[in-house]
Image: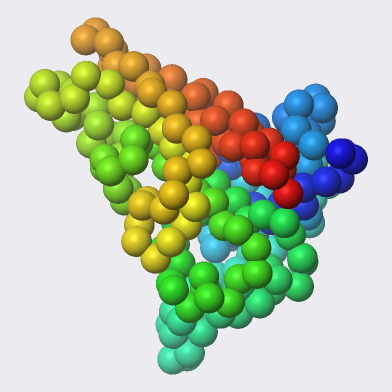
Length: 201
Ligand code: GRF
């Protein structure tokens, strides 16, 4: 398999530490992939700077103009899907992408779409999953949490799981400590999941 074998488009909205994990894994020859393009729906996402620093092309693709002029979310999703299709990626990675993609996006998109979620399948779907897991642990409702990479389907954080792993919580852990361990684990899991998909292409 050549180093360029998996062509990725990565969608981001924030810090981009998971994008950085992908960039670093490629640079260190731990992942045979190339990031074709990074798209953000937020102009000030630090992920955009990380991409530029690594010499990766970026786009800012905001929803606001679509809601302001009446074209709406569905048109946004279709235009987004079409612009991604033009880049001809093998895989689209949602790495901290904070916009729920519609069924119209999924119908239009021509490659597999995966998402990283900081909770185990069936638990804490949606936002603030780390905080909600931490609180559930404090109430004695769970003994540990985890994270997963799954295929994107219209239902939030519910598609077929590609890889998952547990993340322990210790009784004395602060939320910040648990969060740090979660993020470290996510960085590894996302790279492993992309590698796994790449091997089956
Ligand atoms: C991660 O915890 C991811 O699971 C969630 O958003 C966070 C993104 O972090 N969907 P970053 O922007 O990659 O640092």
